[in-house]
Structures are given as structure tokens and as C-alpha cells.
Image 1 (cartoon, rainbow, N blue to C red):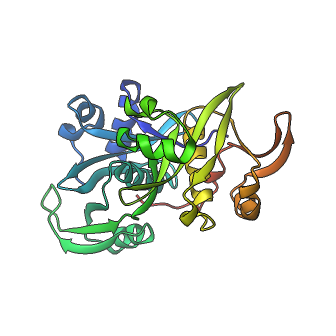
Image 2 (tube, rainbow, N blue to C red):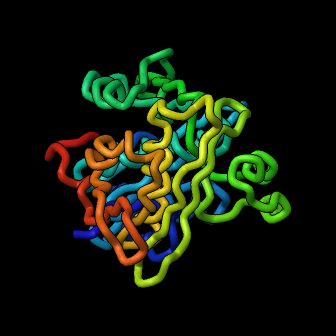
Length: 281
């Protein structure tokens, strides 16, 4: 079974997202909000993919330091949840600390978004004029996000890398742990060949070690590997990871002897799909 992927919409997705939108009728959806047409005019549209087929979509944007999203629809259980979480990650990567959406003023929707950490803060009409509820989630200040140009010198100090390379722009596969504006850790992913992603053990500022942030960083690097076509992730069994062995194994990173030496290995087989059979939206 192939894992669910969250990615940016492409032209090939147009028929599938249109069919899902027409079947599910997310708030605000209509001919003028066709996701592929919106993407062509600069809107950010994410799609969920499951077993090679489009399983859902969402639009998101930022306005005055707040990430908003709408047009959330899915056809596979839990795809909607993964899309909402993906919006949160994208917002964090952009330095945004608040995410909001306007949902139908209905207990089912309120309960669904409540489980994802979104609480009602106001009432506002939906695009069609129906009663709506604004829900909001404050995103964690401490986060693991994609590397940005202004992280160059922090990465150099932590990992001994040449800052010039990072000053040229974001490097795919590089992530930092940040506490507000301060970069406190770094982890990276490289292609080891044959579908294997080699993950460099996380490097953290001493004040942040031993708090479980290392596991969070490994998970973020693993998500990048999984969504970029790798079937296996491998991270050298560095001594600093030994106290976290149980936490890593709980997340399916298992200690193995590999040709490259002892490592924590995870095979990406779609285990995130074995969640409850019913999901909203």
C-alpha cells in the first residue's frame, strides 16, 4: 500500500479534484473556485494522494500574519485531517503562528476541528451567506521547519557547514528546529540511492537536548523522505539517539545492522492510513 502524500496540485489532478469538490461540496466551493483554476491564478492548493489517486484538497493563504484555509474536501478517511495538518506545517515554515478557518456552524464540524486543536473564536457568514463559525489554532512556537536563507550562520555553527551554500537559498532536505526566531537544531536528508534516504542525525543546541525534540526532527525528515518517493529512511545509530530508542521504535524506526553500520531504519508502507474508518470532512 502506498502512503498518503500531501503535495501541490498539478494539472493532471484537475478532473479528480473537480469530482471530489462536486461530490463533497466544501463550504464556498463552486465553478469559480475550481481548485486547478485557482492554482493557475496563484492560489496555494494542496492535494492528498492515496494509492496513486487524488483523495482530497485544500486552499490556504496568509493574511496579516494569519494562515487561513478553506475548500477542504476529501474522499478517503483521514485525508482531510492530513491536509489540515499540512496547512499547519506550511504556516509554521512561513513563520506564521496562527491558523484559522470558517466552518459551518454545526456541531459535527466543530467537534471534528476541535479534535485537530481548532477552537471557535467568532461567528462569520460562509461565502454563500449561511451561518459560519471561525475556528482558530495557535501553532507551536517551538517547531521543526524547512531551512531558510537567514538560517545559514546558525546551521554553520551547529553542523559545521559552509554558510555560503545556505545563504544562496533554501536547500531541499534541510530542516531546522527553531524556538521563535532562534535556530536551535538542524537535520538533513540526502539520497543514498536505490530508494533509500540517508538522514543525518539531528544536531541540537545543548540547552535543547534530551527534551524529545530529536524525535520530532527525525519524524520531519522522515516525512520529507516519504513524500519525495523514498521507500526507506535510514539514520545512523548515533550514541545521542540511544536514550530515545523506545520513542523512535514507537514511531517505527527500528534498530538494525545495515551494511553502513548500526542504524534506525523505517520502511514507508502507508501505516498512517490505518486510522478510524470515519473522517470529516
